[in-house]
Every structure is written in C-alpha cells, then in structure tokens.
Length: 155
Length: 97
Image (tube, rainbow over all chains, first blue to last red; front, side, top):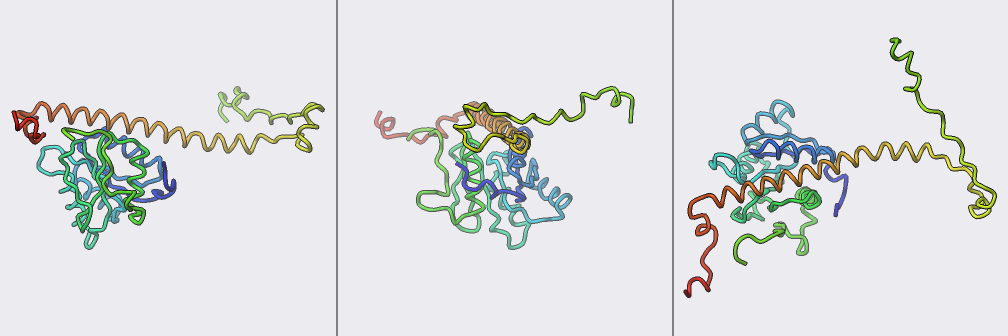
C-alpha cells in the first residue's frame, strides 16, 4: 500500500544495474511516480552522467542491484563509491536490490542501506523507496530489511 | 491551412454533449437534480486515465523484468561448480548421517 503518492515527486533517483532492461523498466516506473531518474550501468557511469546532466546535483536516493557485471564491484561497493563522491553525503539513502540471500545486511551507520529481495512487486518497491526517504517511518513493525517473499535454502 | 485539413471536418471537436433530460418519474426520485453536466467529469477522467495507465504498464514491465532477472540469477548460481555446497551450510540431519 502506498504511504504517500507524492513522496517521490521531483526526487533525483540514481539507478545502477548492469542489465539495460532492468534499467529501463525501473526508470520508467520511477518516472511514472514523478521522480527525476538517472540510470547507469556502473557507478562510474552514474558519476559521469550526474556531472553531465544534473550539474553534479546530489542524488536524493540510490537504487542499486547487488550483483553487478564482472563480479569485481558489488552493489554495496557502488553505493559506497557514489556516496563518497559527494562530500559529507554518506546520508544519501540507498536501496540495494538482491536476487540472492548472500547480500550482506547493513542497517545502521554511515554505510547503511535498505535491502530488498527479488522478486520485487511495484508496491513493495514504492514502500521501500518512501521508507528510504522518510526513515522516521521505520519502526519495530516496519523493519529496515524487508522480508523475503520466498526463502532460499534451508530455514 | 493545408488541403488535407480542409477536407477533414470530422477532426474537429464533436458537438457538445446534449443535456440529459430525466423522465418525470425519475425527477421526483432525484429531487432537484435534473441536469448532469458531464464535461468536467469526462475531462478529468480523460486526464487522469493516461497517467494511471502509464503507471500500470510501468509496474507490469518492472515486475516482469525483475522476475526474469531473478530467474537468470538463479540459473547462473546453479550452474556454478559446487554451488549447492557453497550456498547451503550443512544441517544437523545431514551431519548425523
């Protein structure tokens, strides 16, 4: 269920994924919610595009896939690198999307991000984005790490 | 104006929607409401629906793409050598055997 349909309007969201189809689909959905979207296949690409098209504007939110191509950098590294490019911007909220349970959780501290497991439903995605932007809504009944829709491996 | 536009009067706006006259039997039931102006409601509907439709389509595309990506990830992981042993730690039942 959507908390606030206008919470994402005009927010600059950087989406990083090595799959161009995912980039287009995620970008399209975010744009339909009123976001300004910048898509990139890598962190370096995102930084270049931010400088070119947004005049180095600080992103309001980072959405990143955990498994990036090549296996050299994970989504966690990409988030950290993008945050470090903006001085004192470690508080840029980030959402890590993972298809495996091996993605590390990091709920607190400067390197914190929210974790969302695939398959991702649009409503859950929207709720996670709103939660990233409005951390005050996170509470005992509203955990930072969202529950997996299905369990991988032994319980 | 180009000739093609001159010959296409059907491209213009349609005639205004005629007033809806309510039969006398119903007018008693409806009280004073005897005329319904549909234009503002229709305009709002036409303006709201495309945006909603775009969002619904974007949601469907997004969910399908991510489901396909997940399937690809699972396939890739399973294809890795000794993937099962690396993925799942041994459970008590297996250790006892």
